[in-house]
Image 1 (cartoon, rainbow, N blue to C red):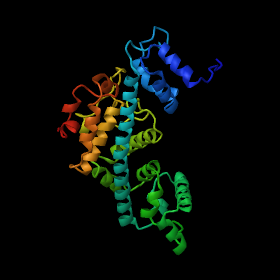
Image 2 (tube, rainbow, N blue to C red):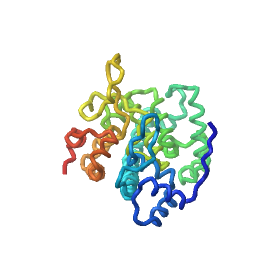
Image 3 (cartoon, one colour):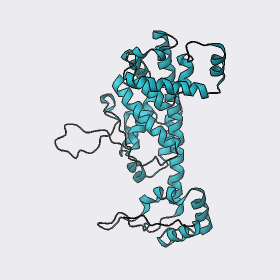
Image 4 (cartoon, rainbow, N blue to C red):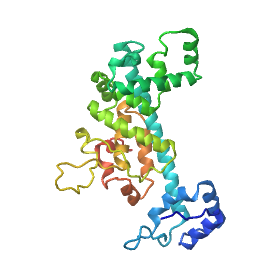
Length: 314
């Protein structure tokens, strides 16, 4: 089937939404948000407000009676606030991982542990990772990199504690997961409240994915994540499992919506600092949404009594 949709003006988009039943007393205000946010982007937030489609049809494209522009904007604004809070937490987690991994690696194996191929698995990818580090250092304008290049000729890269600062979260997670010395990964995991190296690496993989969603300002709140958290027995009273559809399956997987990710983030942040205000700020934001919106994020009805959340009761 050939794609044949034509681009439309903001005025045409506003008229279309109003014809589908959207309530907005001031069409100019609607056009303002369509111009600044975009029809396609905002569309992801009005989908929950559409009538259920008839059988065999993907969407009804008609709004539930009484749906107001503010209903859509409120979710859009909530999602933006949620992304900012998640990014704040991921910054803390990333910096913690970076610091603890670098410290243990250099204490155990020296300042340039990253240049010892024998310390890492998947050696066929090791050289490409080092090459990316070298490009990062070469392009860097950071004072410590400029100083190293001006003063030292060998080794060709700065020490790990310096080059580690050029790594993205994704690159850092790969370096950590490919470190052969499992004691180092276990050390970092324990300092984040996670029980094993395997759980730590699985969680890190998901958090990198979530960070990319946030960094690109994409919809987060009711997204079904492509990557899924590992099963974590220690947190079985917190984590929600996906409804079992395969009767031959012996165990369910963790649900792939935001509740589980936010729960793990809470556990990790609180483990770093039990006096942090972060958990209560996250809870306060979640409580601004309706129960139906919380359910869309994977929240169980009893979420405030779950161990990871009840500890932060106001």
